[in-house]
Figure (spheres, rainbow, N blue to C red):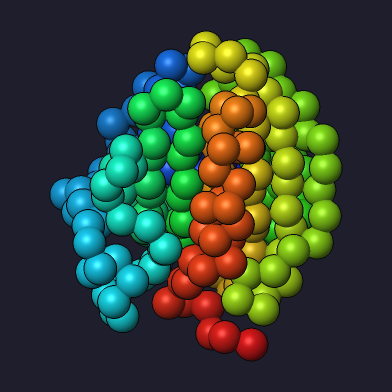
Length: 202
């Protein structure tokens, strides 16, 4: 059963990352990609949408395309994603997925053992440069920083992972090295202002 849990975590995390490395992401089997229709996030509705599964501090416009997507397989999940593909590519995502109780894995183990397998599929090569404790809405988790090379050239990834009960909450930032620098302020806001409905404020 533990092996099934690792497989489910890896499959879903990879599925939700799939839009972030379009030149290097493998095709996900259709059996793993059952989703609801995509809902575009635009205007002030993004922040004022108090019943949203995930609230993020960015809307479509100024080169950004933002959308929500709900997944039903291989596990229930929800992702809010914003992509900036004009010039240097930058992708910002906040996502949550739910696993059965017997498949819960601590955040540190996800970062150390499971998610690196996804990076290996997304990139030509990668190196985890740092992991350290972090929080989302006051809940303890782990930050992981990755330097990688994709079909577009050098890339960076920063993921913040929290496991609370049977839910896994992830904030992902992925882009070129220059985009990481150019959008530093926005990336900081995304980390600070993302709000998950499923995480009670501590």
